[in-house]
Structure formats: C-alpha cells, structure tokens
Image 1 (cartoon, rainbow, N blue to C red):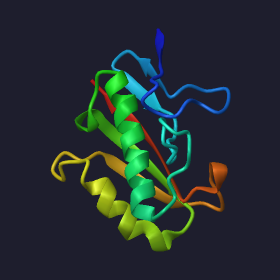
Image 2 (cartoon, helix red, strand yellow):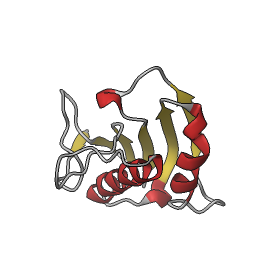
Image 3 (tube, one colour):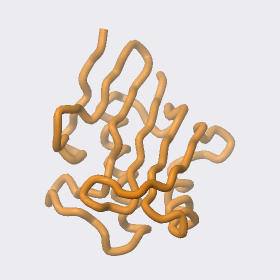
Length: 126
C-alpha cells in the first residue's frame, strides 16, 4: 500500500504529483528544485546556494517520511550545464558520509522546470 508524503517544509507540488511516495520500506521522491518553501521564491543567486536549497528541500521530504540522508540508496542529479558539476557535487557531498553514500547518476539536460540549474530526486529505504 502506498502512503503519500507531503510537508510544508518543502515546496508544494506544482502539478499532479506528490513530494514523495512511501511503499513498504521504500521512499520514492519527486525531483526537488531550489524553491524556498517559506517565500515560494527560487534561490538562484549562485549554483552553490541553489544546490543547498535543493538539498534542504530534500532533507525536509526525507524527514517527513521519518528518514535521513543515511536512508538514501539512489540519487539522480539533473543539471543544465555540466560545467557546474564540481560546485554542485561539493554541496551535495556535505550531506552524505562518503563511506555510505548512495549510488548516483548525474545527467546534463537541455532544460529543467522553471529554468533552474539543478534538480535532484532520491530513492530511500528504511
């Protein structure tokens, strides 16, 4: 049976989807972009601040499902410019223990919602 996960601590969905779905022990998150859930404004000042907001949004979704980044088993990072990879990666890395970090792929794409630079989704397990 699936359980819908939504929290006001992350941006509200802007379409026909939820922030995450919990099925048994598995959590499947929707992609998060850098919308500040308090102001509903995009955080695009620098790629580092944008990535930080994305990760904070993901943290809120994980916490709503009683999980942490330690529960994450797979991440997908979508970026609009591979030149930003090292800066995104440096922020992303601060959220994980390198010895237990999840599997991951990083993909450069032509465009992302609201023309942001980075979007991240995750799969986690209890």
